[in-house]
Amino acid sequence: MPDTMRRLLYLTIFALSLAAGVFPTLAQDAREAPAQQPLAAALILSGQLLPGQLASGQLVSGQLVSGQLASGQLASEHMVSGQRPSVGRVERFENFPSKYVDARHVEVWLPPGYDAAKRYAVLYMHDGQMLFDPATTWNKQAWRVDAVAAGLMAAGKVRDFIIVGPWNNGKLRHAEYFPQGVLSFLPEALRAELEAKAFLGKARADDYLRFLVEELKPAIDARYATDPERESTFVMGSSMGGLISIYALCEYPNVFGGAAALSTHWIGALERNEEIPSAAIAYLRQRLPKPARVRLYMDRGTAELDALYDQAQPRIDALMAEQGFGAPGWVTRVFKGAGHNENDWHRRLDVPLLFLLRKQPAKS
Image (tube, rainbow, N blue to C red; front, side, top):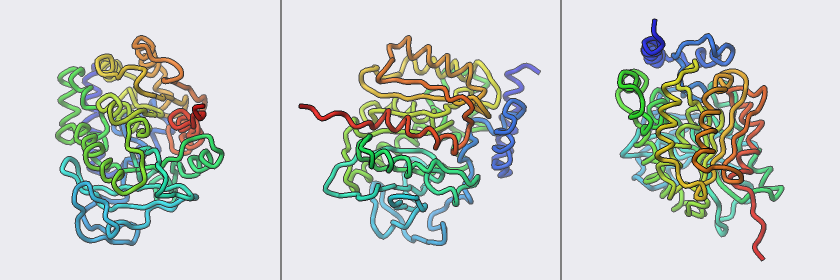
């Protein structure tokens, strides 16, 4: 069977797997033997499944918040205790409404000593349900970003910042995180199959970014003591979350001043291929911001699914150099032995946080 036809068949398997709700097993199997797995878990893996589908007013973690939030508002009566971080505190806004995407929970982490009289940078991180508390996640792993962030702040190494983590949307995570602008550079048959099967009808990344930029960010800036400028607004994610983070920087360079993409899933499958990385390169060649305007961090591991990035990521790196990117505004790293999971992202999380948020020497 030709490679393209095999990938199209695997996309059908992918859609059926979504409907069957079998992703925890698929994700674990893929991490153990990525080269042998079909595209059924393509582009997803970490953080794909929710404990259940979110619906307005649904009971989450034993607490219910009734009523609806108006777009752009974060009212106290809709705020509940979120995941339990090891340090600082998490506030959750349940079923944050949007005219662009489905309502979802949003976790907001505030560092120890949060002071409304100060101004904080903001880091937006995708897959919000996977960020802080491994006891609540499907695979019992989490980024535990609170511990790393608080430690760096306490040591005076980074700026004061808060973290905003919108949850992913389960079966629509693929549709929301796959960069929509890349689709026009794909072969027509593959593009149509992605939209019909993997995206469950249509691409949604542009709408997801509108939600972040037009609805969530204004609400966060209104409620919290943030510095709303682009120089203080960053975005980060892993795997598919890495793709959408880079896409956000390309589409909204006037909103986001930097992005970090860990274990970026350029291959769009559980096997190496040419089509999807080539389409991403074509898009980036046209849409990358000027190097002097942004900060961009990329990395990959060498184990589990990350082992399959050994061809695609170097192609991206070559493009970045061609487009004039280099230190200190762009960095790409390889972490030998690191896999495609939250525990490994936690272990190196200080690197991208320092890259984006390092405290600059005071000007004399």
